[in-house]
Length: 484
Image 1 (tube, rainbow, N blue to C red):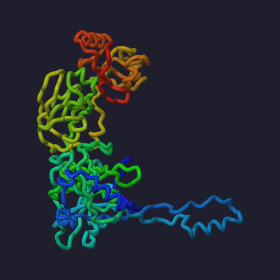
Image 2: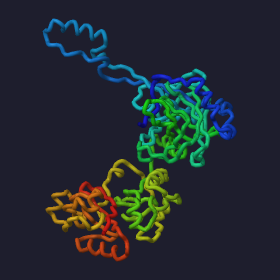
Image 3: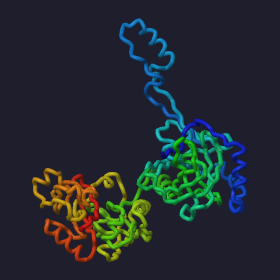
């Protein structure tokens, strides 16, 4: 279970002295020699820049236990009315709830503080509590980004505040030492040390997941706090943990600084994020699709469809292309492309290297701005591939079938009307109403076209045909289907 780490104090578990001694005695000598002897000098310089964040929020509605239903006119009616109103069972109007989190100062003169969006979401009042006991009320939330769970706050300091700087998360290696400072369970100024356990973790929290995983203890209340390298630079913003019990089990996640800095800069400048937009739908290259394309599994991002009049369409990118590089950066996984595009400055023309029908091509794309309307646009309902011919009952598209399955008038291809449950196609999530618009990267307009494409693949010695399929709901995908 993933848990966001901003939360009020609920309990503390103590580790016995005998357990601590056993750990020390059993620790390998090499670990003791190579690990940091002490992080005290670093912590002393940084702790004043880390803040504890307390928020209050007005919540409407009843509190306490609800009033039991008692028959009108019952002799117990007055008794229950009196008892439960005293106990708070009746709605008492608005009430205040509070929560705790962490943050850190990045500009001491301007009073700029970074934290997680979920720490301050819905808050009516936000108070920063500093290590020296002083407090400051947040004047304004300069901006927030729900997709990376970051927020930028503004206070008016009476004197310059201690501040910290961002470092590079890209240079961090698995096994490098890191230190977290924050407000776990409301215990302000807590310092924990661990290592980078992994990088580029996807915890399914948003479209740009690229978390640093660490075993430095991160608990409820650490949300929004900094993760430091041994140079005292912020290389991550602590955000979430995996915890069945609510406490740390050594699996915490931080937003990498290289992702956070671009978001924070935009929140400071514009009060919002302004991400780059390419205008494609993509999918991963599985082993069966890789075989049909002649590439390695998980190489680049496969374009399943292109948004009409979008940047990619204008640049000449087509469905079936495999994007290998974007703006000089390798696209090693399908998840990597959205992050790279999003961080690209709007209006920049970049080079895109792709693979089309086995041949490498280079195109130039003018990156546009991602806005919600564009993000929700349907991709152009053209070329769609699907898997093999075996086990599929196919028929040319007619007006009747278009109406029956809700197929757009612009879609060309052959429609699937039935699937043999014993065939390979039955395991490929192909459904009646799907339209095969492309096979072996050739456009299909008739059943004969599909048959010729399958035969061509068979003669080439390949065992699977790559189909592009347009679903009845407008989704486009590639499927590799065995032909034998």
